[in-house]
Every structure is written in structure tokens, then in C-alpha cells.
Image (cartoon, rainbow, N blue to C red; front, side, top):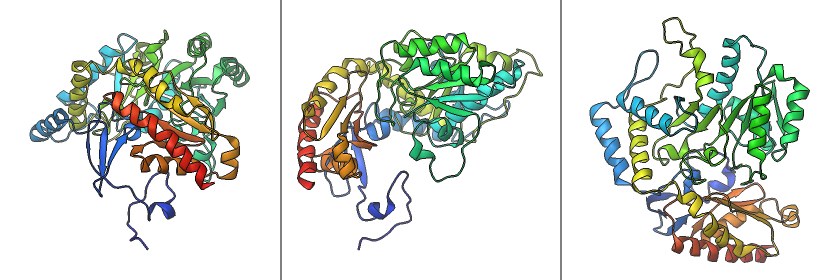
Length: 422
């Protein structure tokens, strides 16, 4: 029997993991190596975040310089560091709404919870404290913090941990009419915010219907509900623009982002706040309302130094547009399994991410089939991610023809291997 270790993995069957860990020891570009020396194409960008791949000396050097000068400092009260100030300014300059402010967190879950609290605080400060209700979408994923679990629309993630916070509800992910109906049911006077991923990521790579995002944003504006774009996955080139949501002609009230802001090298999240939401807290004189919220490591100077180096890489190598340039080549690669008897649907064509969903018959016969398919892909030298009813891919933006050819070859072989197991 394999030796057990103390490490408890997130979202893992630890009975299975303890005998089958894949220990990654190094990474370079679009590839990683395990402790047996085998190379894999990282077709997941680790967890949607290694947008410029692995092993970047620019990040190492930026982090080393920062550690040698100021290794840590906080942002509470009047405290600040130069990297935090500079990164906030650069992120704000890129934001789709001019004059935005930036509130840092330690990661995506932090900034989701921040956005919920800030939405409620904004209405409290503008004389409408009853506006506290938050609406999410079915299959939406917004992290696993308290409010993120509640606004998320994946039932399994909220199961078995007791009652969720009140004042949250969900609507079908593909219906703007359902959003308006829910606002009217709850009462616009009570609804604070609507959370929306431009492309649903962890919920299965679900693309928005044509016109959905524009209509949803207009509905929110009409009912004075804050439109919160969760771009933790979508930003930093994944959809071919800086934030993902700026691919559509909408102006969100808040944007949550993390992951690719440092290429995943150091945990960091950022909430981009439009001027109208920030205004009550920025009166320009002492005595302004205080937003009593913040994480200890939010805007850590070393993380912000990594963020600044990351933005330099994106700009210098023109990586951001590649999320759009590569969407058709990726769609072509995964379409190699369209028509396979085990495949119900292939979803691709919007940004550099895609999903392959298994048929209901396969899943009914073996609910563990997505995990087995993930393992079969790994045996072919490609790392994919099992997601609910199938597997998803989101390669680094530096991936090219050779990597997509490898993916196109591995998927059919892995599906054939899965078929042979049944």
C-alpha cells in the first residue's frame, strides 16, 4: 500500500489520491514534468491561470528584487507599498470603465466575497440598506468562500456544509428574461447585485447566448442592480482581451479578477470597482465612510511585483489577443472527437478554452467517467481537467500548433481507452 501523507487536496477523493498522486516537479513553457521525469502538455494552464506558461525568469527576478528591498507590508489604513500603488494604477488604466478603483485580495475567492460586501455597503451608504439580495446563475462558479459558495450555482459545492446564507438566489445561466423575472419576484428595491461569468468556466465551459451579456447588463442598469462580472478565469487574455468582459459592449459595476494577474506565480486578486460604486467611499475629505474589509496579504508587495512583471510580459509579447486568435485552432483541435460515440457535445469557439461533455448513457453507467477520461488523457501526455460531465482545457496562451496537434491526437485515444474500460 502506498504511503499516506498529511497533504489534504481540494476537491479530491483522498482515498483515491493517496495511491495515485501526480507530483509535478518543474515546468517550462507549455509543459510540466512529474517526479518520474515524464513530460506533459499542460492543457489546463494549471488551474486556468498559467497564461504565459511556466518557468519565466522575469517573474523570478522581479520577486527576488522585491524580497531584497521590502519583503512584506500591509495596505490597512494609510499603509501602502510602491508595487501595490503601481499595479493598482496599471490595472485601473486597462479597465473598461475609466476612473475605476482597485481593491486587492489574496485570490479570486477573496474578491468575490469583497464584491458581495461592497455591493451591499454601496447601497447602505446611498440610503438603500434594504438592497442586500444577490443573484447568481445555475452552473456559475464563484469560488468556495462563504458568499462565493452561496452565489455559485453548482449544488454539489454547497452540499453537506449546512444552510447557505440567506438573500441569495439563482437563475438559468442562459436566460436574461429569467434574470428580470427574478429581480421582479424579489423586488428591485431589495436586489443589490447580479454575478455573471462572461464564459462559465468551472461549471462546464458554457458559452453565453448571443446578446445575453448585453441584455443582462441592461436589465441590471434598468433596475439599479449592480452588474458584477466575474472574470477570475476570463481575464488576462483567456478571452482575447484584458478582462474578458471587455469583449462585449458592456460597462460592469465591478470586475473580479485573479489567476492570470500574476500568471499564477503568486496568489493575488483584484476587484475593479467602477467610479459610481467607489464614490461614496472617496469623498476627498476626512470622515468618508470606511469599508471595513480586507485580507492580511491583500496587495502584498511581492505579489504585486509579480503582477507588474506579468503585465510587462503580456504587453511585450502581445499575448492578450492570442486568446481570440487561438480560439478557432483550439476549436478545430477538440472537434476531432465530435461524433465519437462517448461524446455528447464539444463546446469551443469563444476564447482559448473548451470542453468535451460525455453522453448521459456513459455518465449514468459510470459517474466516475470524467475522472477516468482525465487519467486516460494523462496517459497520452496531456493534462486536462475533469469537470462534472466531461473534461475541459484552457492551455497557456504561449501554446502553439505542436501543442494543439498533441491535444487533437490525445483526446480520441483517451476516449477510445475509456470505451475499452466499459
